Amino acid sequence: MKLIYSILFLVAISILSCSKSKDDTDLIQNTDPETEVIKPKEEVIVEGTDPIKIPICDGVTQPAPELINENVIPTDKKCGIFLEKNGLLIFEAENTSSDFDKWIYETAIPGYRGTGYLRYNGPFTGSSPLVYKFKIENAGIYRFMIRSSKPAGVEQDANNDCFIKMEGNFVAGEMNSCLANAERNSTQTNSLKTDTKFFGTGGDGEFKNAAGQLDLHSIKPWATYNFKAGETYTLTITGRSSKFSIDRILIADLNKYDYAKYNAYAKNAVQNECVVVN
Image (cartoon, rainbow, N blue to C red; front, side, top):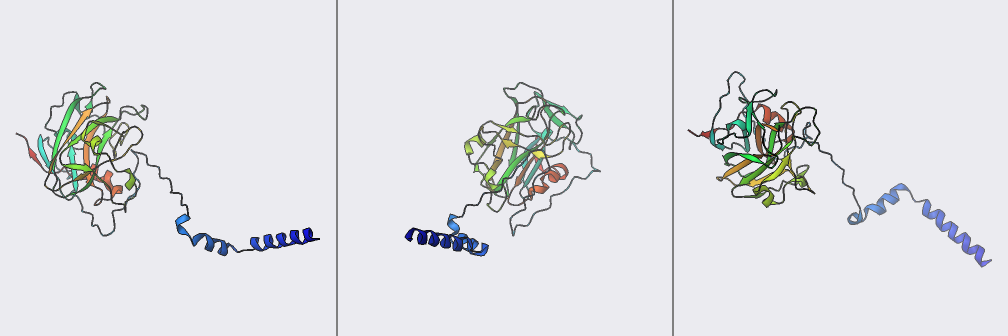
């Protein structure tokens, strides 16, 4: 008889437990938020496509860059030092002070700006460094991108990379946590100061978008730099993959400019002023 009473008691307890409302259950779960496990939403980013919109942080006023005057015929300049303005640097690849060597100056690929673009036609081991110097007036966390192109119809990972190296007084740039994809910033200063593979193209058979990220084997971070005001930096782009073409270079303050507008800037903003080499 005692066994029967015990069984009935357990059944009653089970019924009472199952009768709790959803509100009761939610309340119990939410009383200890530290133990709540929230799975982060996976974000897929494909270089060379229209970028995911990343708004600038609250309270930051975004400058409006000067746009290209289509009525003015562009001219070549052998620029010694480009001058950053309002957290933005844009310069034409062909306006380097370096000899082109294995880089071929062309005008065949549609969508280029300036007077033309440079296409690499050298060995895979790397050659023909292109040097660009620039001076920073506004300190900030800057991202480096290239408005580039590869031949149409080739494999996704073919003809789409070069080596980049930055010299000067800087460390890897840590993006403000208010920006989406902040975890994609560079964390290794040494990889930014040595010749490192930089891949990703913004157009197949055309110049369209600005793109690119570092290849550090297991991780593929953006190239981000913490630049200091008043400092001059030296960027070196060295050829790696044949038929990889460069139209323009874009270096922008991530905490000041809306990433969703980078492609428009890379295409339509004027080249920064520079000190011309005679």
